[in-house]
Length: 462
Image 1 (tube, rainbow, N blue to C red):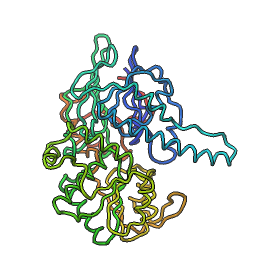
Image 2 (tube, rainbow, N blue to C red):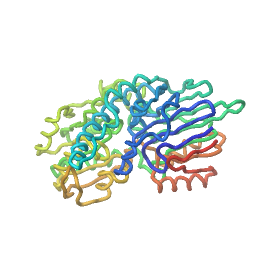
Image 3 (cartoon, one colour):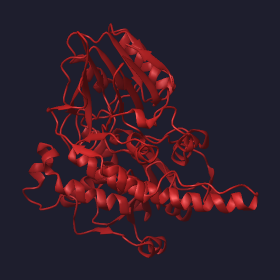
Image 4 (tube, helix red, strand yellow):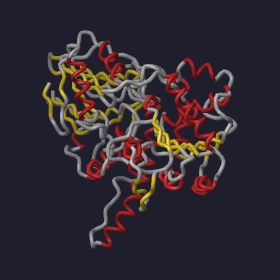
């Protein structure tokens, strides 16, 4: 059996793994590369494998860095089944449709530049039609149920506690008389999630591929996260400013909305206006409202006094571009939640350009910022950035609450690993920046695990 790393090898994005035997080939995830231009350029390249040779794909969850290249995969000849949970399928459709629209706009802009330079036009990575074709291949499966992928490969999803419907996957491969268990963590959530259930543990595996996004860090507990959010909101309100929160449309936006609604209800923050300025987050929130079976006990308790925990009197959905632009003229304190979470696109870029120069305002990061993104540089403390074609001075206060991350810290990753009995023969560390991977590798090696961090396009024989 061979496993080849086609993404997330010594980088935190582009998750894609190939598992092949003499008779069969399947993929685990097929995500976008995100970050600087060199990284994002990989999305335009041809696949380093023939998609027509693969009979199935297992999708762990609906984040763009795990599902973003699926329509391109189908466009390139993949005709196999795509296995995912119901929530993952619904969220993936929203995210991939949005991605297709962004790709179309980006390509139109790029082609204007290329025309001036006498270069041939570029086609978008994929279109909405390609997304529709990809969705026809999805097959919905549930947590904790075996599903047959091929004649000799069976898999099972375990709740990863990361976002709605996200799963870790255990794959059983039979090769003649030899049976192997290989597990892929996908993205693992924290021990305590604001909205969804805790991660489930996989009891046994011979080989494990584990993410390491926060392999060198600890998160504060849920109460500390909430206290920090309350502090930032109240401080910005007292200054009379706007609080801008760049947020990922799936999970993070819903977590922030839920928290703010609860805070206002309990009188912990002023009853100020809260604007959800992300069309994709609005659609994702509808999916969250539909799938209450994934909620944790605390949210289910809140539902007893509220029909919808993602709606409260001061929450306003700005659905149109005109409504979004109107937020620039607001002078009273307010909260604006807008995509995307790394400030690489979406409406948040316009809000930053119009409000980052005002000392009364605050820009609050509540998620991981990939190296090279605008969010990364702002969080690092840059005092002047280039944004939408112009240089902008940074005078607003920059805050970050890393504890809201949907990724497990190293204690949670170790806890997840610790439930394999016996220890896996080998632990492959992926989906992390190099420093995080090294730190996590050293930490678990000291606990007796045999570790290895594969590079992009490296092939591993098992």
